Structure formats: C-alpha cells, structure tokens
Image 1 (cartoon, each protein chain N blue to C red):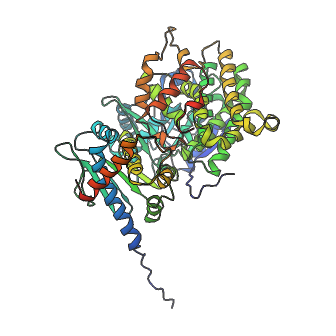
Image 2 (image 1 turned 135 degrees about the horizontal axis):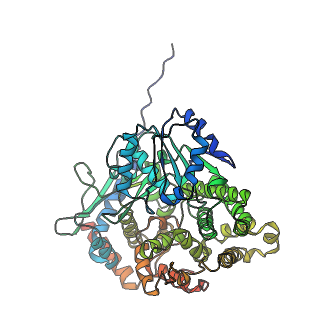
Image 3 (image 1 turned 90 degrees about the vertical axis):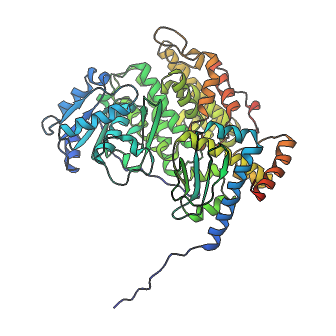
Length: 176
Length: 415
C-alpha cells in the first residue's frame, strides 16, 4: 500500500517575526506621526469617531491595529484583532507578499496593483490610510529606500523631514 | 511586451456577438438550467423598443417571469431590494439585464440578494463577501461604453446615506454577455460618442496603468483598434450594423481589460466630476483622457507610445520619431474629441468649461474645481495610477482640462 507522509505547512517563524516587528513599529510610528505631522493629524481628524483599522497578513497574522480612542487620540492598539470592531481591514494575502512589501522590494502601489492585498471597508477610509502609511514610510525610511515604497518622494522642509523624523522615532520607541 | 512578476486575470464571461445574437438566449439559459428569467431594464430602453426586440427573440422558447423597467439613472439600493421581491414573487430562476451600466449593476445587485436569500444588499458590500456562485445572469448592453458586462464590480447608490457602495467579486461576472447590433442601432450620436470614449478610456488606462498585464493588454489593444477604426464611421452612419457591433465588442474588451488592470487618474477625476457636477461619465472620460496621459507621461511614455499603432495605424507609428510617439497619442485623442465635437454639432464637449446642460447652462462652474479635487481624494482608482496625485495635482489637471489647454508638464511635481 502507498504510504504518504503527512506534510504540515511550514510556519516561516522568522519571516512572521520580522513582519510582526515591522507592523509593531509602524503602528507605533503612526501613533507618533498623528501627533507630530499636520497632514497625518488632518487625515485622522476626517475619519469617524472610534475609527479602527487593521493591517495584517492572511490567514493568521501578524496584525497591527491602529484607531482613535474615546478621546479621539490616535493609538496603536496592539496586534490582537479578536473582539474589535474593525472599520478598515487591509490584509496582505500571504507572508511572502508581506516580506516583499516590508523589505521594500515592492512598493505599496505596485503591491496593490499586483493584487497582493484584500481591502475590506469603505474606499475613502482606505485612501486616507494609504496616504498616512506613505507619509509614515517617508519619515521612517532613508530616501534611497523610501523612494521604492512610495510613488513620489515628497519635497519637505528640513524641519518637517529631519526634526519630524527624530521626534517620530523617539515617540515610537518610547511609545508616547 | 510587459510581463509583471505577478498578476491575476479572470474574465469567465461567455460572450455571444452577432447581428442575431439575441436568439441564442434560450439555449444559453437552458444550459444553465434556467427557464424563467426576470428582465431588468429602464424606461428609456423599454420605450426605445429594445426590450420588445429581446422578447421577440426569446418569446417562443422562454417564459419570462416578469419585466421590471423602472431602474433609475443611478442604480439604487431601494430598487435593488424591491426588484429582489419581484424576482421571488414571480418564481424567477434567472436574470436578464437589458440596458447600460446602471441596469447591469442593478441586476448584479438583485442577483446577490436573491442568490443569498437575503433582504438587504448592504450586507454584501466590499470585497470577499460573496462565497458562492449566484443565479444565472445574462446581460445585454444597450450602450457601447461601460463594459459592465465583463466586470466583477457592481456600484449601487444608497440615496439615503449619499454613498456609492461597491460590490466586488468574481461571482459578479455575468454568465453570458450578448452583443447584438440591434441593441445599439438607435443610440443617438451624442451618446455613441461619449460611451465610445468611455470604453477608450477604460482600455487606455488599463494599458498604461500599474496593474497592466499581457492578457488585459491584448484586450485593451483590440478595443482601442476597434474604436479607432469604427467610431467616426458610426457617427456618420448610425445605422452601420458592422460598426455598431465593433463598438459593442470594443466596450466588452475594454471592460475585460480594466476589470483586471483597473484604471487611474482619468477615472479618479471623472468620478469626482460626475458626483460633484453631474457631468455624464463618458463625457468626463473623453475630456480628461488626454490630460491623464500627459500627467503620467514621464512615468509611462514607453507604454503610451505603443498605443499609436491601434490608434493611428502602423504607418503613422513608423513615421513618428520615438520621442514624439506618446505625445502623438495624446494629440490623436484630442483630434478624436474635436472630430466628435464637430460631428455632434458641439454637443460632445472638448473641455470641462464647455460642458452645457439641456438649457445651455454651464455644468462645471470654475469655482467647483476645488470641490472636485477634494472629492477625488476619496476615490480608490488613484491607487493604480503610475504617478502620485495629491489635491494640488488634481486641481492643476482640472484647471487645464477646464480651460482646454494642454497640460504644462513642467509643472508636474517630480518631473
């Protein structure tokens, strides 16, 4: 009789850990950028009260949840999506696609064009969050890498770019 | 030929094209084990006698459950939910949509509600809400523009909440699309022009956008070639059956292309102009298409220039120096708009400031451009545009498209 060895799917723990770390840091950076950057602040002000969005990887994570709390402050809300009401759910289809995005081999726009993501929620919310993510990438990454992630690298004043970057990094690290 | 590292393409619609294609409906329904369709259409289509042509073609073999001809100009959530009741009350087992984009989107919405045995379409909005195949759906387009017969999207307006809801699923692709020249023979020249340019915009944006792929490219090139070769002939001789069928095929091909490759800034601004000022979609597309191409040219001239072959022919392509081909494509589309303007005694507008309503009033006042640019920020089609677009970029494009002057590409950020 044929005997077949059961093949269990690989967990890819290192890739998942890398993406989880990136999501954790990006989440905290968005919280920081909402305090530091006027454009990010404005984008969140236009979103409804209690708005929450999730960016993560299918099928089982990792995830990043960011939303507005009761006092309308933008907060990184951790990685657990259970029990949360998500207004905008952005899921990368698999861990390999997430690695391409988070190692900046593939920009956000190209990843979207290549159907790497499933987005569930209202389109205007998605437009706003993509703009926030783009601004976050410009703050967090050196120009040579950020140029791969965004369609057009913006021309910012010295203060916005470098002082803003320091403030966002500081706030992201201390979680403030 | 551009081959992306990864892409997805799906268009599993059976297309039946011909001068007597309607007569294939009974056989198509039978193959899907359906016998009692609900016909969904609108008053304009019904009064033009097009539903009668369909009924004559199928009457002997198909028992129509009911005919609903009250689809409004914008597909509406209320109408979808009500037509679902009509479907159930008349024991229908399939749907035939006869009309333009609004009718086809309404039919897709009704199909979701009746197939899911639900009462409210809103539960299924967004992507991924549908998990199984729907009831048989046959669509018969009566304009050659929207391409909805080959797309996986339905847009339905919730008039109470002033929202346009998108429903996206491969299950929304119709089972059969019937392209019959009889369905578009009576389309007025002015609408023929606008709808054909709508299809042209679908094909051009699909070919030059970020999500292009070889399969959608093939559809887009064929669509552009068919429109370019047949549109002016149909404008001069509206009863040209071959030309009408060619335009219907072009719209379906363009629909298949953009359903898989999506669209860009032309549609972003077109949707916003339509929602803020009520300009017909096809007219927005015709006006904005050259501006969208100019705006993106520094990113995708190498794709745009290839369109000169289906637009103007191989000889023009060969005679045009490489560095001028993309600009020649833009010039050619502007010339098409000028020719259509002349052929419709000025009803086909060439720039936004020229768009007039039935009473001769300007439809897009210049002071509305800021509102349009603001609305464009909320449109998802911009994700697929090669170049970034912020509020100032939108406004710059809109101002030049309002005046009808070519875009000063030196003003584009990053160029």
